[in-house]
Length: 447
Image: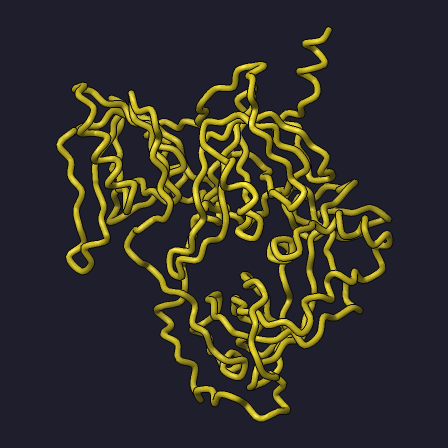
């Protein structure tokens, strides 16, 4: 009877849902890697793949803001008791997920991560969701997930190649097969160097390679795998190597930093592209809803039909919808005013709470939380996605996708005051440099 009580005190990964935070898991950290913006080199946070004793895996993210509390104890291979964390459903737009599970974990200030001293039950060191190489093409168009696969290394005589333009950029190419199919693989950066070293150290003639969380791509009709967040496991390797920062050829650039005045002049060349602006939040609108009720399955905003929440996309009733932050702000720089909607994930990252927790603190869903007013009178660098409605002047409301932590900037940015810096008359932007970026922390990253 004592053993039963010990086992039952832990929740299972497959049981997690977003309606509560009082969870306690017993999990092993299968993989840990840093999320780094490839263009700005900004550290975004820590990514983890946890596995429980039922071999269920889930991705977890520790934002840079609180990573200092966990980076010393969060190590690959260690078993932990993990409690008091947020569970979020993946949205329909979240791509390149390292785990094929509908939810992921976000650490908070009050999250507890305790290394286990004595193993009560065993947890496997690794778990994979292996696809046949022949099935890799199915994920070429389904960009929601990365792929795990396994194959025999066809040629051990492989070497890293340095870029002619930049000696610091390195890659390695090889091919794996499973006797029925084969696929080309390209590793970039640190992973390429570590992979070459590991292959040379293995004396066996045959080497089997498990590649986890790889990106399926196609170049000139040839299918291949890339290390987007990258980890690799080799037969007889004791310490898996993880790619901290992918160094694949740059396909994009950091979104340009331009003025509010120039944002309003953007043409159709910028539809669905991103730009950045440095602004001051002049006002947070308390009259508009500070959250949306969304479908707990697909993340689409629900409507009310006959007194019930209903998802238009799923065509089903949603008895208990999720809540997502959505605050409307009026911002300005020295050149003008702009209305910007702040998104759920960035608000959660900055304030360290989700909408359910904030509603519980306020005690009244119709009352605007004071905490959200704290965005006012602060300066941010904000990344905006330009919509067709913005360009065609149908809507003057812009949507933010990334928000920096508050920055200290002296001076008053009110457009009624004299500008401290004269902005350029035309936006200094090259349309070809609009981002197609995919960072390690967007696995929905990892990273």
